[in-house]
Image (spheres, rainbow, N blue to C red):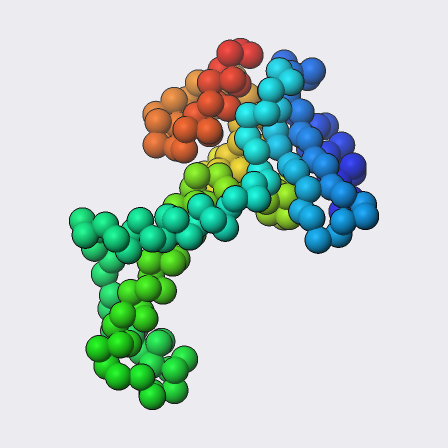
Length: 189
């Protein structure tokens, strides 16, 4: 789906109290197809959630290094992880090295999860998540662990005043940016 059509659909579900205050913005470069462009959500003309960041890969690498170098973080490795590495390497790697490789894989996955939770998103991810949002129920979007699905659901007009007021306890467990959009929606009631 083209960005303009997707934006139009998302804005059609926007809570009426947020018209003029909340907007989806995206830029891309026609003559630079290798550039991802920018994608962000603005509230009161201020960029609140930036979903395109050229330093994402660098931050992921730094996060991975921090996890590796922190002696307090213990990443458990089970036999399935070691067997997966053994299968990938076709059994030619020594046993003690298999554990190191399995641990490094787990650390890498953990670092990616942390960055995902810190809303390091890209324009392509936004479009995928927005299309998913348009195809699933509002309850699934609210219950999801995906930050962007939560945000899209919170600003949706299908989420009424009673449901917003009953979500106070659940929102305390969510990511700070989701809490920000919850507070924004509360302020419109």
